[in-house]
Amino acid sequence: MIELFAELFSHAFVIRALVVGALVALCAALLGVTLVLKRCSMIGDGLSHVGFGALALAMSLRLTPLEVSLPVVLLAAFLLLRVSESSKIRGDAAIALISSSSLAVGVVALSMTTGMNADVCNYMFGSILTMTKSDVALSVAVAVAVLTLYLLFYSRIFAVTFDEDFARATGVQAGRYNTLVALLTAMVIVVGMRMMGAMLISSLIIFPALTAMRVFSSFRGVTLCAAVLSVACFFVGVTLSFALSTPTGASVVLVNLAAFCLFSLVGLLWKR
Amino acid sequence: MLDCRNVSVSYDGKTVVEDVSFALAPGDCLRIVGENGSGKSTLMKGLLGLLPLSGGGTVFCVGRNEVGYLPQQTPARGDFPANVREVVLSGRLNRRGFSPFCTRRDRASADENMERLGIASLAGKPYRALSGGQQRRVLLARALCAAGTLLMLDEPSAGLDPLAVSQVDVLLEKLNQEGMTLVVISHDLKSAAHSGGKVLHMRKKALFFGSAEDYAETALYRRMTAPEGGCGF
View 1 (tube, each protein chain N blue to C red):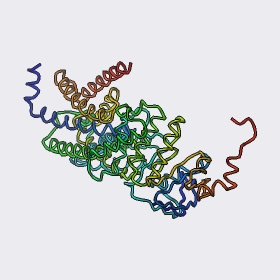
View 2 (spheres, chains in turn purple, blue; view 1 turned 90 degrees about the vertical axis):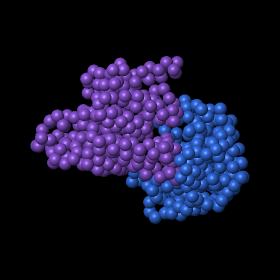
View 3 (spheres, rainbow over the protein chains, first blue to last red; view 1 turned 180 degrees about the horizontal axis):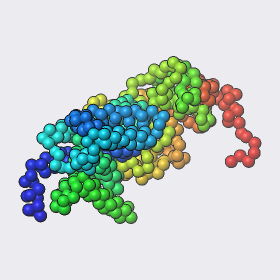
View 4 (cartoon, rainbow over the protein chains, first blue to last red; view 1 turned 60 degrees about the horizontal axis):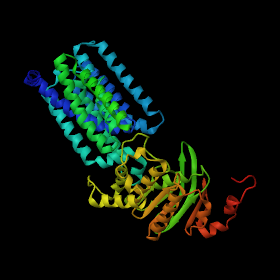
């Protein structure tokens, strides 16, 4: 066991991946509580597909993937929010439309240029080998932004999540907080996509909140539990993936699934 | 305090409230009555800025940090994790300015209002585990936390047992005597007509606006409250 950890921490890329991953897992869990409770968890999923489409386009055009996908995903987050608020097309349907369309754009762009090479696979299903120093810098910046804003606006985020009408009636600018949460989510998704994979990153947003809700019944309890749980599941997942040579992203998702099952069981027994 | 002129509100392309005008002075108590679907709740949402006004009407209202609001329906979905104290405390947000953390005064106000509504013992309980009437009282406590000078209540007594209804009535009367301006949506025409305040009778338009004494004299009121034939439940 100790040898395993010694070996794990002897690689610079693993340490980079752990730092980035833990920060992304923490931020995703915090934003996830709000998104899940507002029934917007599909926004995370939609945005990750948009992210993949943007990455694929960038690779076909030989541009830097991150520099293209960040603005595109931010724009998509803004649009998705507007569309789901306008209620002409239902929110979930709008997200499905946008996410499958951008996936299609990405696949077509790739087939016309590079094809489905290993690089593309890495972006779809994640790889901890791809972490660079600039990725670490970007993820630390995003994490600091998310944590600061979340702490500062915690009560307002609760108010808007619990009862948007009341919050607006008493002068909280609900629209601003919704936009803030969507934009922060977009940033977390872009940063986390390289390691977790575009297809798997949304689980980091959805799982911790749902798992915490099995056992805790206060907003603060759920928020804290989701944050701790998300980071813990990430570390366990990375360690397992290292020991068993399984893909990182998928391993983290499976550990999250196990935690969800465990908490569901505890929740059931608790209520008896 | 509250002055609305030629207010119309449309909802999905249909005009639900049409050309309503009235004005309230500080300390007034207005009861809005009318049948189901007559536009009472929509009017209140229009006054609060939750729905856009159509047709050039205007609403002058005290600042948002003076307003408390009780919505008609319980807002969050069934399994929302929040305890009673968290919900009541969220009513204090409009008093806090930009400070991110709640102060001792916020907590004291939350405690006081939970005490007033007889839910102090539920403070740590999950909101989702409460009965409909208890949830209603929690939201009322939240509205009281938010209200500085104006309190807008959409059917405060819906879902409450008779004892709780009279407690809430006494509480509202006391608040009104202390100078709080009240706007209350109610189905109870008789108590509205004998409330001593003002009455607005809605049926898409304002059929009546004036004092409760005048309202009790109108043909509209007599027709609505006339005992009907038949088996009288």
